[in-house]
Length: 231
Length: 396
Ligand SMILES: Nc1ncnc2c1ncn2[C@@H]1O[C@H](COP(=O)(O)OP(=O)(O)OP(=O)(O)O)[C@@H](O)[C@H]1O
Ligand SMILES: [Mg+2]
Image (cartoon, rainbow over all chains, first blue to last red; front, side, top):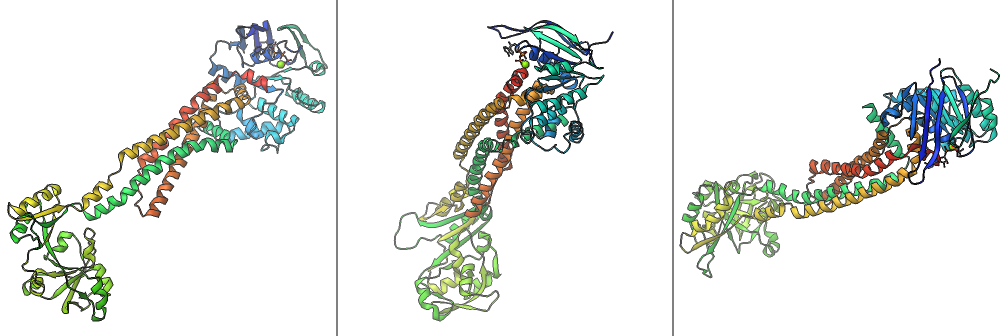
């Protein structure tokens, strides 16, 4: 039996105290190390909420989140943050680059406080940018980059730590179709036996191009489809 | 250590990204520290000049002027020889010199200058032989009047340094000056007497000579200069009694450096006041830092969110903002201290003060600036650490 990389065990997430919003209801999910998957569903169905829990950015109201079989819900902030930094790479719809830092500086941010020398950090960050075709753009600020380029910097930042899982919340949502296509090519290239990639998307074409498609509705997983694509 | 350096780098990057804002929040600590350092420095430097002067002068010279204790009129009161003897035998007294200023004598460097020197007469002082020792003033050239001159009632004179310049007297030159037409040979030039500047343009002659040439009646002085290195105040109080011994003679004493001494004391209440005001300025600056940083945390919530997503802990986020405050405090302290020191330097330079800046006040107030800044950064930092990353990232 294959060990799951990330798993949710009947996880619920309830927002608010006065007015409770049941964003996730007893969801269980296993992500394996070579997964290339997508999450689809109507707005408000809990996709982002689930991604946040998978990425250890949030803690469930009920249930457990496990990374390599280790329960992360009982960890303290320090342990959880460390694990997040090591195991998870995030990509967001809004890129979330730090505006006052260069492309290189943004990628380097993922490597801070890990005992690396600035030189090592810069080297790794530059390599990562190079992988995404941004060699030569290291010193450019986010405002000097196009949306597609910004998203590629964000992806470079997500993978520079060599994470087990890349979690992307509508990574093409803010891009035109041409840039979206390019970014999807980048994600397709991230596919690897050692790495899981999980995309939240509204684009059915993108969803259909992944190997596994999870459909959500009203805070529950209603379908988990292995798509036997070309491969 | 690496983590510490990383934090400083991140904080500096955050601060340099918003230069104008950073400059504005720096102004608080800079003005606060600068004002305090400047105020204390100027206060102390203005006194420093006096203190340096006091060091030069020594504070142990007493001047005793003869005074007729019965209030007699007409005759100039004198201090009789036996009284001078008694003063010089006082235990703390090391040196006593009597002087008598002769009036109505016109001194001329050469005959043609008569009109000028009649209008501005030069003081002629009959003096004891140890005046240079008592005043602690060296000769610029030549020698002072000696025992031989005294015994011979010789017509020799020593002149003050300013008078020598005025007369164009050359070092070691054979020269006579004319006192009411009587020629006196100049044997030496006395250096400046800081405690008795009138001596700088005076002519000194021996008492015996004065008695012979200028009808001063006897050789009793009108004034005593008394050097008492220990118990100076006590000696000053004793002298009138020692002089009079119940008789008609009297003396009034003063210590010329007393006034200077009082002036040279730093005004503590003024210092306290300026430090209070400066402390207040620092606190106002601190409130400014807290304010600006709180707004900054809201504006940078997305940055905070993504840093959390990248694995930075809550503590790291708090430290990042605390370090920004720390850097502001350190820079504010350094530049404030430099600015204050600059003001003190300029003031001292333009007013001829001796610049005094205590390192402890520079370092101390810089540290206060750091403490205030860090305290001000505490609340914004906690706020930044408490932000929920998912919420800040959702807002974009
Ligand atoms: N911080 C919050 N406080 C209260 N309710 C929240 C909070 N965050 C999310 N919700 C609610 O939880 C539900 C799920 O939200 P979520 O963002 O996960 O949906 P989503 O599937 O990502 O939607 P979209 O496709 O629009 O991004 C929604 O009803 C939303 O309003
Ligand atoms: Mg969403």
